[in-house]
Image 1 (spheres, rainbow, N blue to C red):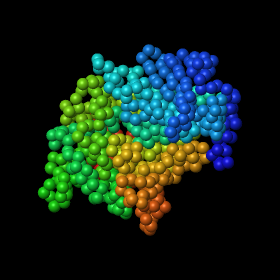
Image 2 (spheres, rainbow, N blue to C red):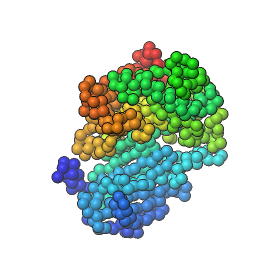
Image 3 (tube, rainbow, N blue to C red):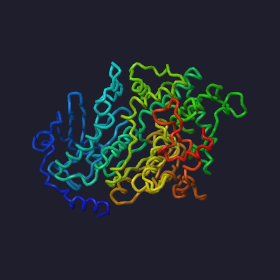
Image 4 (cartoon, rainbow, N blue to C red):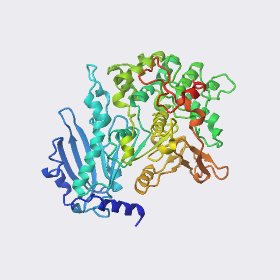
Length: 556
């Protein structure tokens, strides 16, 4: 018996986790008024049925709940349970169950009602539609310009909290024991949800995998439209995709070797200062094809730099050099920031095309003052930390949709919060919260030139259940890899993978974690004070950045 299973069985049998013999069948879960599910006043409807195996999917008990505390709240929660012994399940701790729950996060404005990946692995899997089954975020603003607070609160927090709580409750009824471990697994919106749960439901989960988290929701979604405004104002419309692709390639070529390894990846885009004016048609350095006009070059440099106010101070982060432009700066805008401006201006008909570059700071400030306190997910982790929870995140160094420095910014503030000094202590933070930055990796592993982490959820489970924190994450593949493949270690922030100097650069064994990504250019992460985007100064209070040091740094 391996150590992980021994630990699991021990925890199941000790400390009151075993409650009763499991005699409840799947069919009874939704019909027995005495089990606390069907008879709960907040459950508007409940169904339970055994779903037969199909293809690679195992048979499981599917419980569908409609949760609502009032007429306007209708949250669908789906819970998939590996079959109990009473329903013919076998091979696990109880029936086919491995003794754990795994909540699955959504994406964009949509929830997630596909629980089969978790169930197939033996977990009680859960998902929710976030209270709006069509994935449309426009209803957050009512036609009269007021906010639909029920919609917003269900989308941001209520639905996922109830998903976690009900999955644990239903599991206990069905198997006759409480879960030994409870996890969350999500990326993008699912990552934001993981952070929200750590901040607001910190004593219910043992481990949270929250990748590419969409935290600071209002602020980064507003910044997603910055490039479209720049191209509209300076060029008259979108820049041709072929020109943007050439620009991306030129930036990688210029900065690739800065880390000592030429591999088609910019290790730390903050230290890459490639100026795309070198690609202007007619200059000696311009590419043979897809060169740029002066206006196009100016717009692209603004996209990389990110939005600033009239003082020249940074409001939010820009697209990192080496990232794919097509997600945000393609022929049409990414849809969520268009909706975000409707939220910020309290007007479903607000047209982003009416916003000029010099008006962007006001629009960003409108969002922060009107709605961001409800959406932005930037609270502390005190209860989660005290509960012994573990939070693991990987973020792509070239995330093309969610600017990676947003979560780095949050990570730095938490390193300061849990430090014993007046400086961020990343080592101390590593005891319960580890952020891994994957160079060359795009959003949730898409559009990646660099190797993508292989099994971060497995690393989280090992950390929680065996007390073995991940010193690295193994990553593999990426479009820049040779046909034979590439592996790399992904290192806990603020370290990065450094080549040992010998052996293949496509073998993770020839790299070690070291260096400090904070030292070369951390001051570039300094932002204008929250809610003072239009005229405010850079805010260093609680940021983990040294005001005096940054004052003398040339980072504007």
